[in-house]
Image (cartoon, rainbow, N blue to C red; front, side, top):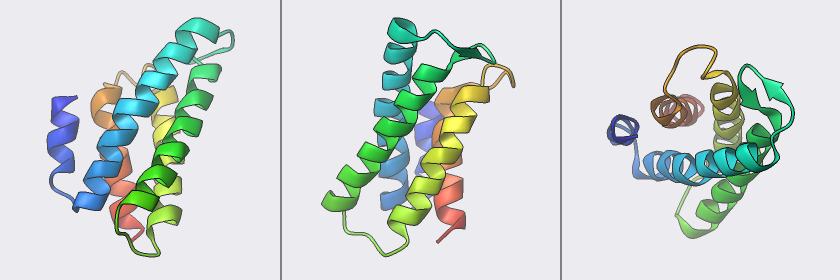
Length: 115
């Protein structure tokens, strides 16, 4: 988690705050929902947890979009980044990746690339 957060410091404040917040909230939501309600397993992760990740990531994006000053690119690039991070979270176990690094890295790279 620390490496993912440090990687985010290479990007603008808007991007790094978004990526870190999504990691903290959405990954936690995915774990809680996946353990409590996960019934459909995909690549060793639960579909229910991934859906919780997506929804909570979008909620964080909206919340931060209202609070932080941002340009017109924030919502489209952020939503695309959260969707990409959802797939990374879902496939991370199969690809032997640590999602505490890959989630914020994906969000940062996608948001930066879509600016």
